[in-house]
Amino acid sequence: MTIGTNHDAPRVPPHPTLTDYYEDEGSHHPYLTRIFDETASHYDGIVGFMSFGSGAWYRRHALRRAGLAEGMKVLDVAVGTGAVARAAVGIVGPSGSIVGLDPSRGMLAQASKALRIPLLQGIAEELPCRAAAFDFLSMGYALRHVSELRQTFGEFFRVLRPGGTLLILDFARPRSRVGLAMGRFYLNRAVPWMARLGSGSQEAQLLVRYCWDTVENLVPTETILEAVTDCGFQEARHATRFGVLSEYVARRP
Image (tube, rainbow, N blue to C red; front, side):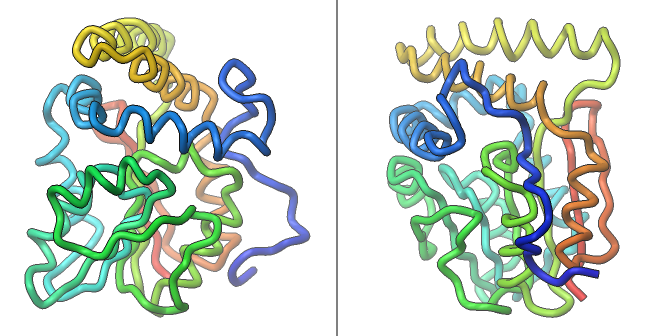
């Protein structure tokens, strides 16, 4: 079993390079930071369209299912505007603590309006946190945006305490032809149009299309679970909710 990142292992990106949006992997992070900065003020509305307004109760239930409890110390990676962190605050209570991290200054500015927690700027592949500092690490709808899975999971392993829990929430690629066709219509056509109409932002429309393309091109679930296990996690498991949402849970031994 490999503990942490194995630098000799082949790279495992979450999806191929999407040249409709950025030229190569070197321009991937700058592209994402720019588009999330520019759409931060519209982001909650976009997520509302994508989740039919069901996101808040689902996030609370997912956190509890994974074992989040009162008094835990949490790192929320890719905190965005704070959707997952807000749900976690109500669970860990005053005896717990939450730190949010995101590469986008725009997203962190939005999160700071709703959350009274420490907010750090950084990327999942190089967490600016000490080792074994957290009981629980969450990542909501952002695994598709990292550059390499093993490096990311190696960092998650490093900052979790022994016995700590990893929870990753994301969209699932529909398995059936009908589901895929419906996803393409809704997330690649309808929601981008609604995002543009509701925000007046062309970048918001582009962001939704980019997000769908990352979902459609995401590596198989088995590849993600293998990368999690390769980095030393145990009891790694995956569940699909409502046919369109993925939950990955694992434990640091």
